Structure formats: structure tokens, C-alpha cells
View 1: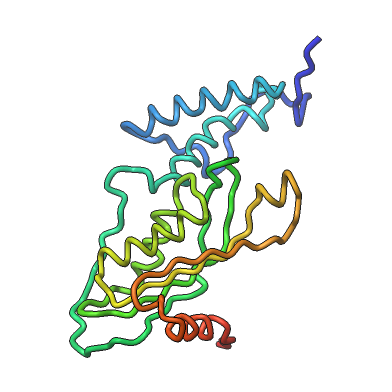
View 2 (view 1 turned 30 degrees about the vertical axis):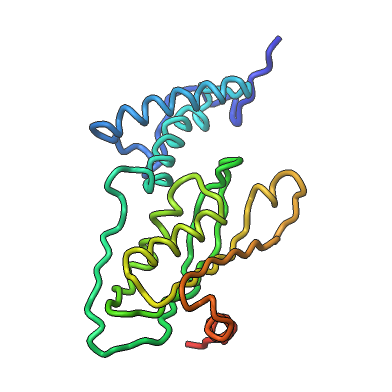
Length: 218
């Protein structure tokens, strides 16, 4: 006899969706949610989970809506609009935005990895609005990803859009596919870097890394 797993086997009466999860997508999104939810329900059924349990009954739709949000970077037209300004001051030194938090999903296991990015560029004729650096990171993070690819994509985007003297991106992240499964090494930190232009020069690169090591107090 097949065992059905329920978190609350005695509570199979009227259910109430969790607050914040019962919004109804419209248009194409509604169809996506319906199809993804159907596949998620099938997976849960294969795992012998009881979809009549009120703790599980809304889970397929919740997961589908979560994926719409977490994979927003795959949508057509989601690429951030980069606002640039003339470099009238002739500023040709380093601009760094560090400790930018991000969350993404491992393309190999579909579990999260998360951490911080440090982004630097040296402008030529244009400077970029500082809020755009986190937006660029978020755009590429909101999709199934590899940390190595994410690092390169952010660097290449800035290199191609700004035509700067140089770009460097460093990302430090924890991967739940390393911590929850397999080798199960909690707290392991993965660091990746990508550089373009003048950051290939050792002195420029060392200046960036030295600034990252500085402790800031507010």
C-alpha cells in the first residue's frame, strides 16, 4: 500500500491560502503559473506527498509564482536600461560599489546560491548611475545560473555598454548545493572574478583588492 505523507493528516477540511501567496497572475503569467503548478503537483505526487493536506495544497501554485519572480531575468525586455552621464569632470579613477547582495538559483540543482558582489569600473567618457550596478547584477542573477557565468556576464555588460577604461567584478557566494547535499560543507565560500581593460594591470587590480579589504564603519 502506498504511503501518503502529510504534515497534518487530521486537518483535511477547509483550507485558507497563506497571506501574500493568493494573488492571481494575469495574461501570459497565469498560463505559466498553471502549467508549472501542474508539473510541481506531479513531482509532489511522485514523492508521495498528500496534496489534500492544507500545508501542501497551495504549494504547487506558490512554487510557480516564486519561479516567475526568481527567474525574472529570463523575460524579454527585462534587461535594465542603463542611464549614463557625460564624464565632464574627466574622472578616470576607480568607481567601486561593493557588498551588493544577490540571490540566484544553481542551474545544476535548482537550489539557491547567494552572497555579495563587488563591482568596479574606471570611466572613459561616460559614467553610470550607481543604482544601475545592482540592477545589472540582479538581472543576470534572476535566472538559473552558474557563479562563473554570472560574474562574466556582469563584467561584459558594463564593458560593452560603458566603453570604460576597465571593469572588474568579484563575487563571493555560498551554494546550498554544496551545503545541503553532496559534500555538505556548511559555510564554504566560492569566489569568482572577471576583469576587462586596464584591470589586467597588476597595480590597478591590487588597488581594487586593497579597497575591498578596507573595513568601513558607519
